[in-house]
Image 1 (cartoon, one colour):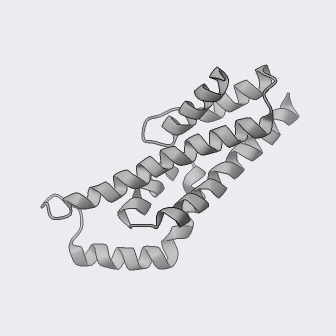
Image 2: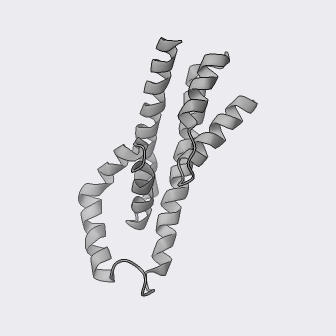
Image 3: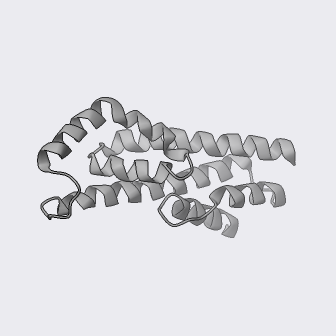
Length: 142
């Protein structure tokens, strides 16, 4: 049970702006425990997606400050960006698994008011596939 919790929380934190390596935890558990790989992949994916949802929420929360002078865009710029994002940009969420740019993409999706259902669906596919491929590679190596 502790291995699942450590994997879940490392995956959750890794999806936020706090640096963490959930991939190392997953590979370590695959190499040293008898836990089913499918369960480890699911736990890592759920934790990582939940962390991305936190980013999405923070992005949406930033909109509360759009009336402030320091906010980086005007109302009209934000409206144009949201129209563009909802037409073309939501597919960038498939890149949410990428290092360095994946986490900011999830924050931007919150700012752009991406609906939670499509956000979770696209991010789950991206992050789940990353953990699946990582597990397959790790098991082939070990």
